[in-house]
Image (tube, rainbow over all chains, first blue to last red; front, top):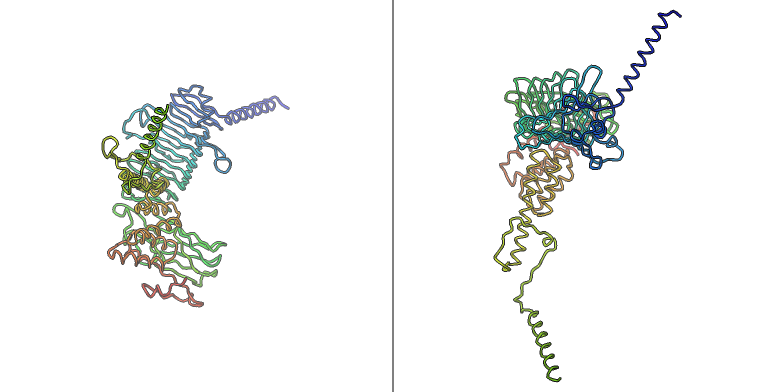
Length: 362
Length: 214
């Protein structure tokens, strides 16, 4: 074997060893202070591990008995941080963990879930309360921010104390059974990219001053299901030209920030037919200003779930249901046999307007 | 010795006599207070006014005041619940309405509010029960009839929805929501064999209702 070949082999070995060392290093989490922020890197971080790494209760403390952590600095999450219990989904349910962000005044808390090349920060909240507290009694016109550029998963958690959740382009967000409340600007603000997914189900967004949800730039329709939105200025605010589909959601007012954009209100309707494999077609009644056709087969239980639109809100004047202007309902529902040609049943003048509507054909 | 014994007997007789005098029944003049144990268990300082100085309080008035306080508490809880309801905090609204009803079962507004909250929480069966109880307490409460009609509509029971709306309109003929909803009642048609392949004849209004099956 020539000297060059031996040299190459040695270089390769060294490179592999370096890569392995880097990978191993990345597998372990650590937290440290940089630019007066707590930086969380690597995997497997928890409130206890961050407190251990910081080793200064004045900066970050964790009381395992009360399950409460207190952070006196802002957080930058470059690795992964799990707050709460992994077993909360199925196994033994532990007590709720609480992270308090303690700052001198309102509007300066920043929790940043970062994303850079090859490194995506992850914040997992499971049965957790994330709260910002401030010592002064000032009006919180400036929001505290939870900025998500990486990944945020919140299951059965609460985020409160004027912490606005800002979903930035490229971020991945899953919010299930969670509440974002006591805000002063918007509980949830979204700026999305093409193909970006935002999974929101069974959540509550409450803002004391402005909007329950504020949708910014959003090239693709964004769907949110089964959630409640409340804001003092408007429950839902579509600032851009995006399309927001709210299925089985609870909101009263919609506002727009421009002359484009839509908010589509849908309800899921359960259609029950006598046998499986039948074809159900729901179409808007003739003469409706907005129309749709939705199809689906009945499953093995003879059930078909259709998401039917009540109305499409659009600027400037159709911000709520106005018959003859933006309504998609009433619908005409037809049930066809397996051959898709023989009409078995039909229902006309069917209005969708609430969650849990059912139609039975016998 | 005899004199001392007589003195002791005299003193004992005096004590017994005084005791009997103090404990005697007052021939219908004594005040009888029926205390509901449930009411008695409640002690609330809420809006409680002293009726007079010292011990001149009237126990019956005290009881009445306690019952009034209880109702006040009930309305306080239902006011709180309404706030939670408006803010979309339905679980909190539900527990406040339930507390309001614990304190005053006849709080109609609380019962109606609870039923609407249950609808928001998706528990339509419990909502229906509360609405029926609301009607039991007030047969002319239009809101309950209309809400029940909405539930019937949602569950696909259109003839019943129509009946409830007609009842609501009998009580309040100008109820706009009931009028609108009654005109929105769907019509179901089951097509006979062979009929389905033909263009179907649309039935509307009462003619359509006659065609409702099931």
